[in-house]
Image 1: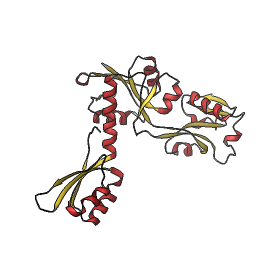
Image 2: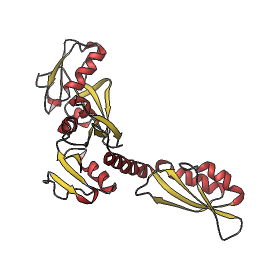
Image 3: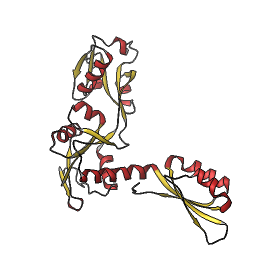
Image 4: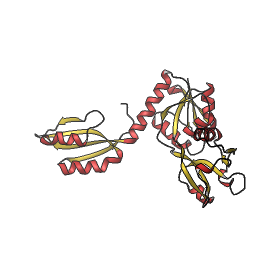
Length: 278
């Protein structure tokens, strides 16, 4: 039975559970449940703190897990990223009091507070900056005003929390993160999980577009909707017309529909894709 770790709370929890449901796996209905057995798919789910997931997977106690790329790197655990999941995007940035003159080049000798000491130390070493890393488990934003640190390094999504604390970002991004599937070793059961999650990712990125077009315009239409490999073209009952079906990037849906309409396509329909294998 495949044992998979899932975030029990935090920004990644709901999105991870939703993706697993779309991939055909059972998920818990009670947030207090720590373990869920999906006998039909031969999987056990363990709901753990996101920061601990890489450690459990790296130790071999669990086969795979969903966590943040930043947490994986900061854990220094012998686990590896096997699939980026396209949600939970964030950046790891430096910040200091608004109006301060701190910059990357002036951090040497300064105190930098963070909840990601391993990740930060690796970056500072790569940059040749000799700063003191102050490890905190939370509330990093208040450390500067309380005199614990001169600057902070923390995960930033929108930056609103930093602004509320009177901080502003400086320097280039230290690290870019998102939710990832991690594992330590490969197995046939893990490959099934990866294929299912890849199917969800692709299904979210594409829609299925159907339309009718006169035969003399089929080639031009197919250039607008080339699909993944090639569109499906079928003759209609009405002579001289064909039906075309193709996958189209979701974000380009309306532009493509406009181009097809202007070309002469009619009966243009767009359908969500709930799952796929490519």
